[in-house]
Image 1 (cartoon, rainbow, N blue to C red):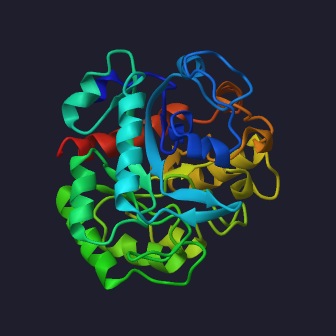
Image 2: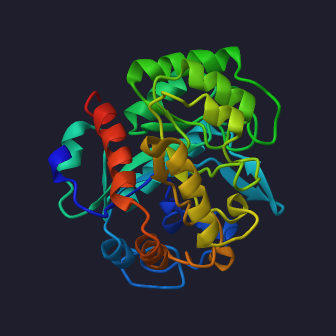
Length: 317
């Protein structure tokens, strides 16, 4: 409920928890598996850290990539993608509350609430696939992950949203689903902003502050004026240029907060990069949280932005 919001809680728009439960991802990220309910400072996140930083909710997106001969490739097999989703739900359900409807928000039972998504729809070839994903609990649809697909162009492509992509967005609009534009290229983002009912940028910084192609361009930012959306400021090292540190995150936060404080959120992307490359001052969630407090980041505002955005949409599911 809206009146249960407490001070300095965290709602993370992008937390890659699948790494705990998927051996393929652990290999890609060189992640040495250990129990999620034990404190380990040499990793981004565990349930002990979550309690210390008041992590209440997170968007968790299932990956649609794999490693072949040391090269990342898009996952194209729908059945395999669905298997990965069901495997995650089965294993993660022991520790987290999966949210797919309004009543789930009030039934956390002291668990962290997670909203499921896919970070890329390379394996989707028809509307029926999207319908199956929805019925399986997916609520956040990342149109692509860097690779172009049948829907749109990723960061490694100049392709715009296709005819099938527009039909897909129309279908997702009818479901009141949430579309994630984090890895789409600028031309796809600009078109999606016009036609998508609910959309977010789950883990992106601001290109004017940190010059990296995944970060939000000035042109896209200007088109977000008067739009109800969220930008999850991220700790992805490349997105923090020129300095891989909390200080760079803070600069992005101050810039965006001044531009439009109502769309600022956190999208850590923890586990989306290896621990050794973590930003200085944000090696793990506890260190990150301490610096948020120390530098007077308005954590409660960021939570409020994100919670209200999702609450209003989830209430329709």
